[in-house]
Length: 286
Image 1 (tube, rainbow, N blue to C red):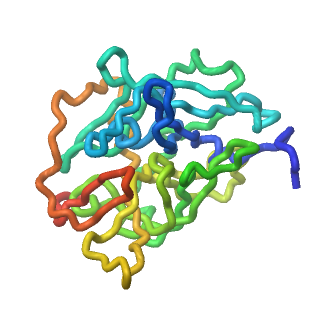
Image 2: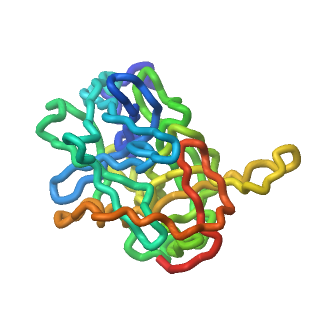
């Protein structure tokens, strides 16, 4: 057992996620989770759209504050790094839409030359996405890595991992949205967390033996649930990770218009931070 982080190789998975604090005019608004994705030498921060902009709750931060590790030999050393959310009045994040409306996933390009020279992180790449969807089935074990309610190892500044399983038919758009369901305990603050599964038996300290399946967005519950008699469903919405290929493509163009979701009959009510509605009928396959 190591009482110190000195000369100890932390699992690579834990270094993919970063604690995100949303800021407005220097004031803290909320906590969330983000993770790193790299494609063609360009680094991106991935999180939920409702973290950077949530019209329904008037959540409108102007910057994200990240906590970055700056020493391989002492993982407890961290620094703060700020990402502005606007260049003038133009958002700096990339977003997209699908047939159901706005996708609750964004990426923000990160200029690696502006990062601390000794920064320590691990990033998912397109090779970590699942190409054959039938490799993943309902009941597949998952890890959701992030900062629930802001909770984390405050000494070493590392996230925690929650256990979950696939709870819907993987590869199908659950009720028409570009997401699948997971069954696991989650909380506010873990929005934007990577949802991963492990196929490899390789050790996870020097390498990243996980496949990125999705991006956690929200808890799901029934509006009709009797709060006195029924427990919460314990189900969550995760967006399919292949949306990152659209958002990180070199030819990406910001959508000219943001179509709203089709007038859904809302059967699910997510966590207060998310405000994601789920259409009542499945309309399309993934």
